Length: 188
Length: 188
Image (cartoon, rainbow over all chains, first blue to last red; front, side, top):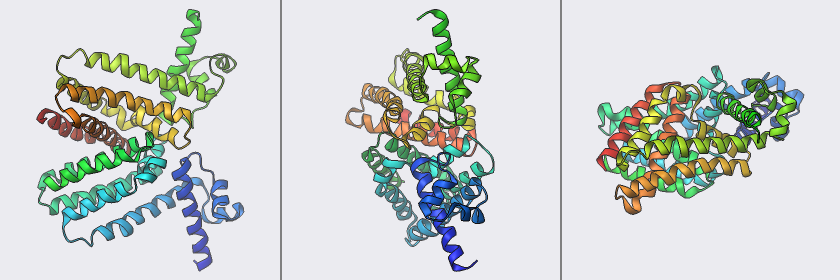
């Protein structure tokens, strides 16, 4: 694709990312995305025929952000314990945004699962990526067979704390749960 | 209100409860609720002028189910530890439904919070009721100042596990996290 086309496609995905996070996937129309991205609506159809198409691209984008943004940064730390603590800190540092609009992964999964279908499965793939990374870190920490349960526990606690932080619009809830989770990881 | 009016109102709320859980609040119309409850649409407006009105009634209904259904049952147990364990067991026993359509409280809170306003605050009140009850049980267990953090941790873990169970459509995830949480509560 030409550079200008890649730019427009990226702008559409970034606009979708922002709007879906603010108002949910169902409440976001292709027209909203066109307006937010300043790409003419007639032009949007060149890149994405349906809203589900942009949903797939959005999930792909968020997955790449996890893999190449967050993981590659945390993986620079030599100690798996420090990597897990860095992941918890990253969520806690994001608490103001979580209070405002919730976790972009959790809220999208929850919304899409009401309808089911391939888009919901693709969204759950974001959780798979997170669980696998956490599982690998706990294995490196010598947790053996308990690793996958530890990974599940940590992701569940962070997701649940995000949900409560969002419901009460109270960033201190995430901070309190993150403190407990850091103590737990340090104690292992 | 006459008995037949109370019946119709209850049928509308029960229909809303079912549909909102299956397809979300935004995706449910007053017409859907009329059809599901077999109350004529023109009649629905006698009871609920807007969808937000039925949203308020639905949250009120779910709150009453928590207070007079779940709590009153668990409160019959003399030991606060057994009460907390019963609450965890109730969520775990519900894992097949959670896998299919998620937690009715968590998913509604998450969806409504995207829009904000009084309905979102009212939905968060369901979490307040749960947190207060758990807090009281941990206090009775002698956890003192740690009680509110314990309550937050338990509710967050259950909510996060529900979310993952739903995203992967896998009831065993809830079972695994519930087992861990029961061990934790037993160890306190």
